[in-house]
Length: 299
Image (cartoon, rainbow, N blue to C red; front, side, top):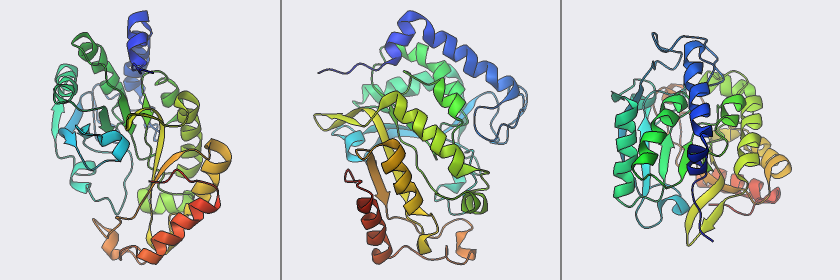
């Protein structure tokens, strides 16, 4: 079985242009992400500190992502600057909160995608796309016309507007949200994200409805949902709520990467219970919890 990115059909039918228009028009009164700041981003910066053009920190073949994304030639990763979250423990805060990077137009963004494809990358991995998805999709036709035909990966922090995700149906091939918290209060305290848990559940349901469980062919991810979850010290991520949700409302066959690399960074070294690393016992207890709910497709 061969896989062709679904955005190619949308392009040929003209539907991609309709979606682009809806996403770009949203910038006039921005509600792309759950912040819904209603700023005209054509003339001002939104809550995310980004205006009309996306800002890119870097792009390159990434070999540190999940194995089905990396394959042999790497995942073609584009790191977008700023973020719609404000995590106190962000390990990339110079990019996500200070905005290190360069503003790019749609032509430059398309050229980045094509450059990554030319290097043999298996996909285009869009890191922190939630606040700049209009700008990303706007660049697609330019890249398609010059030969782009590899999967798009939507690699977000999970704080996504379900209505925006609906507009990405058949544009995004692989969704990879990082479900950070299974509790609204903790999400607000650590990421200043109101109703994170409730919103993320709806968004992830929509993602799964569009692409289903992850399909891997010859070791390479082609289409589907991948979920990340970073274990926090002292069970502060409320991981059990997340695993229960995935098992009962998404799928027991969900590809889940439970991550153990948390360490105090940014402001978290001043916060009790966040100012220490996750120990091996905490991590293994979290993995056991996931298995308890029947989640066996663990990375």
